[in-house]
Image 1 (cartoon, rainbow over the protein chains, first blue to last red):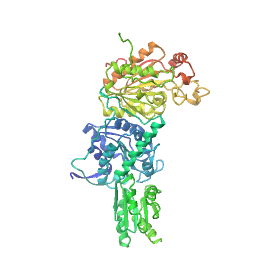
Image 2: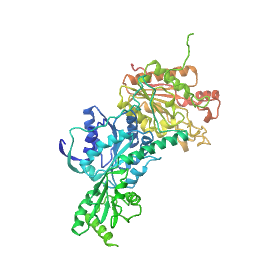
Image 3: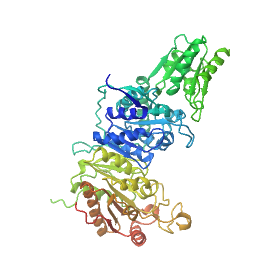
Length: 353
Length: 248
């Protein structure tokens, strides 16, 4: 590893994008992620890249479409209400199979909601907030170091599969400062973007980027091709951390910031004689189903802890498939669960039978 | 034998899907002739809109991207910023550009994006079957103004060239018409100049092309041309609004 720095999460995302070879950024200001734009506004001109503050989130995501279709590594970032505006573009990019990276530093909703951390966009990200049968790869870092590593990886995944890849964090991750250790050189996969619109130079047939297929037979085939790609991603790209699960009485499912709280709860529970495991999905899609299957005979139960009204818990239930009860504990509106309240919930479940 | 007329190279040899009497085909041909004459087909990337010309990427030999409704100027911005040495154009109708995509066109022009927009104004939504467009004339009957467009209910037609020519980033703005041969020849000159302005790196260029929609106007092709001349031109005066004397 190389340089070690103390940096803010949002700035690390921006720096990671530059290191991953991203030279195009299009965005619109919204709290709590705007430092990404500040950083890139300063840095992009220094590396010959493009930074545009677009007139809207809608314009920004469509600039991403154009740049990705033209063969560039490109990123946009926003926070929840802005991501809602981008859904049209997200669907088109997915339909046209363009590789790009989108960052959502989630804040609480619905509506304008508030600017504090939340995980209330889980459904929107993994179930498809836009129209049509599509998927995005959704990466959920839980530290600033992971923000860096997963942002670089997001560009590789995007290029490898011609897919939109989302970094989903929250206001805590975006705003917090932690040490981050950068590699001297990034592993950037090289793919031949021979489909991109770069100008024919009169040497090949024209390339076209589109998401419209009027003929239903052709459109069904296109959808089948997309689904086959998604199955391949489910096979190859699942990322998950399992912690303290072997021999655990109860397993907590949590991602991002919440998973950090759970690690402290695990220590507290141990003192009270309860062994708590943690399954931390790092890819929210593809969801780490196998990790849940592996531990589906945990003696007591599963507990999903989230900053929402209960969203990932549905995927946990699907993965556990009725073998054990699956409980939920969540806070909303920018409130965080205390370690004690989670521990109390665990004790209530463990003693409940 | 001397060839006096042939398909421009930039136009693909495929049948077009447009209705009889529609002028999109002519406008496509003019663009293709300009790409040929300026020898830029190989370095041009076009952007197709949503509307009747949603699939005109199949009609041009240059690289093309298809954009969401109204978003073509944003998509073109993305392309041009990645390939500043290439020629990028959008092809948009009146609903696409002047209703749902108003923000995108205004801000692409504001930024002075070095792209060219061909804006086809036929005062109606064609593909979705004849609804009121932002450019529909007062008293014009459409499927959503069955009693005619009334200012007190539906507001007034929008004059895009006049609006955009107030923006410093828009350096070439001209309105032309398809209603007769002389005007079609003028239209080609304007389209050519608009591309040359882009190539010279001057800024944003747009040509508004007054066009017909015989199907949704409920007129024969001949009647439609006459209706355009008699009704649209008084509302949308032809001519150059900006950049006539730009050196290219």
